[in-house]
Image (cartoon, rainbow, N blue to C red; front, side, top):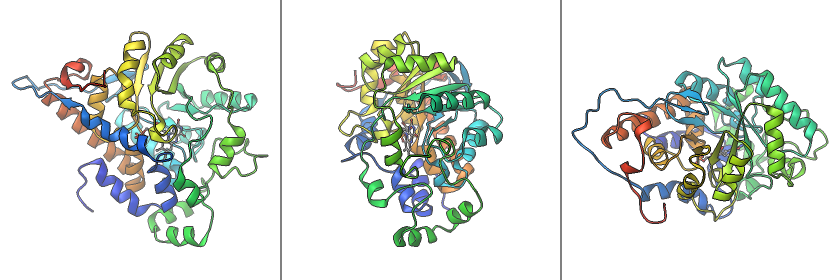
Length: 383
Ligand code: FNR
């Protein structure tokens, strides 16, 4: 086993161990993938200020996100088909998050259902919803999340229509995977993955099985999205979800200050500045570039969270310094999961935590709450 020192090491192992169609599903952006790439590369334009001769004892990355205690301000983002990256992937990721003391967000498009995850964990998790046309089904999803003890819902608002990812179309990506000569030949080389899949019954979208009846090809993400998602979603509908749910609600997918104000107006508890990891509007600015203007607009009214492009503890530190109150990782934990299951997710969280802690200290801060713009050199265009 190679020595794993960073998230990129996990990505390489993940690539070797995972069937091509699922690796490509995660490691891609829409169209030209410009936004996907800039989400990570733009972090490098932001530089940190080194400070010295500061007492570095008693450091803490502990904080809160929507009032919940977190060991560090890093949650696991909702990632569809996590249970195809490795068997029972959502349960494994949720367990790793729980042990580490960070929130886990279950996607609507998960393989393990809300109930599967609740039965196999002991702390409340967050549930992400996509807005479907079918109101009855939406209410049932909320009821199921409530019955499972979920402590927040995350309403994703940037995917009413699906950005095209060329690789998924070329691979015929589906769950369970379609059996073609090419896909079977590829899957046969992924022994550990295959044995795991043979050992589980969870191979279809666990939250939507009841709903997928009547949709022409429920195993295909793009077909199901096109037929079931509500393209007329507006702020009134999101406000209605807040009423139905009655608890904490986070709006995910905000890239514009006016949209951030609308989310604050309807009483959302937090927003996530996110471009869906570069998977939706290709050509959009990177998420980290959009963050400062949104903090200026609503930072004093609503908790602003951040995702898209985080691959290290330093990325977390930079987002926090620009004003985010919490962050999420999508691919960074998925690489760990596909590489080494639950232990890999733990490893990815450990790597991020260690780098966050040490970098914060080298910037002269010992408490994550004191991290602010003063630790940054911010170039023009970042606010
Ligand atoms: C996602 N994302 C996502 N978001 C969401 O609200 N519901 C979902 O089902 C999914 N599914 C999904 C699958 C995969 C494979 C990826 C990579 C991402 C977006 C995700 O929550 C988050 O916004 C991004 O992953 C953040 O970017 P990074 O951390 O992956 O760069």
